[in-house]
Amino acid sequence: MYSLPLSCSPTSCPFLECAPRLLKSLHRISWQRETGCFGLSYTRDNAKLLLRKVVRFGQVPSWRVFREMPRIMNLSLVAAMGVFPPKQDVVKQCDEIAMRCRTKEKLLSVPKAAFFDVDGTITRTNVVLAYFTHRITELPFVLKLFWLPWFALTSIFYLIVDSINRAAFNRIFYLSYRGRSVKCKSEMANLIYKNYYQPRIFGGAMERIQKLKQQGYWIVFVTGCLDFLISPLACELGADYVYAAELVEENGRFTGKLKGMAASNAEKADRVREYAKLHGISLNDSLAFGDSVADVPMLEVVGYPHVVNPDPRLQVLAKKRGWAILRWALKEQTVPTIAV
Image: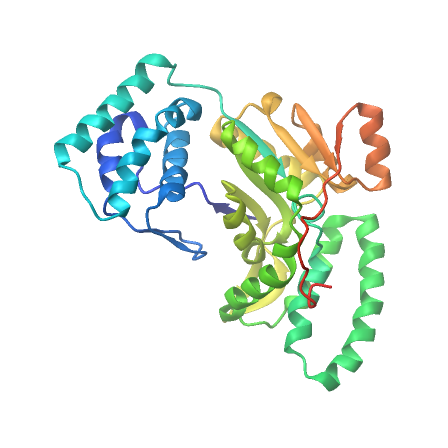
């Protein structure tokens, strides 16, 4: 099982202990994530992102520090324009901000998280069509004429297996990636994200994730999708952590076999408990979002389960248990032809 740590920060110190050093760094650091999704130079939004993550690391209530954000943004915006105030002024202002956070609010609070399935919950997608999106672009026209009917027949087989056991479906389907070069995974991920995932993100999902982040929730994706394919989406939406499937690599190529168990059914619940235990998360105060019966174990372990555009079986179960039912739609935009 792959765990993608997206909530890293340039410092390992709690915010209240390193505020002067941290905010001085806003003038000079260019931070690039290990995932290679993008590099950051400090602007207003980038400074907010960094400060929020450091606040979480130090377990300081994020709303308290965001109340001081106008002063923090003053410093970062001035730095972005290339004008640097005297060092002593920066240190003094940072110390004042940290002191107010220390005296006006308790330092420690029990963190909460929101756990999201991805395919069908955040995006109107599935792993089969994600693969199709890339494969169809690399085949010559003549081969497409033979490959398309074969793929249609195998898709019916995948659908039957998936309805019986999602974990078994993942293990069988990911054999499709056998023999592919590991070097091509970044190119593959970017193409699939641009042409398939990005145009199919639910507007309601984006809004809910943004609100939850503002309320101090940690955003965690728990998905059976492949790690490198989900990475651009996780970066785009600001996920703090991702549990995803990872393929075994040998001699620079994928074997088609999964490392560990696929994140589905009971395995999703295990990943949620694991994350909660590791980070001291209160599951009773946390949320989970899913769209199919494969997500039920994950929904059952949190205090506030939500079902999104549920399939018939999950809708019946959700009504019976009183779970919140959400209807999210795609944003009004043009979907690329390849995605259709």
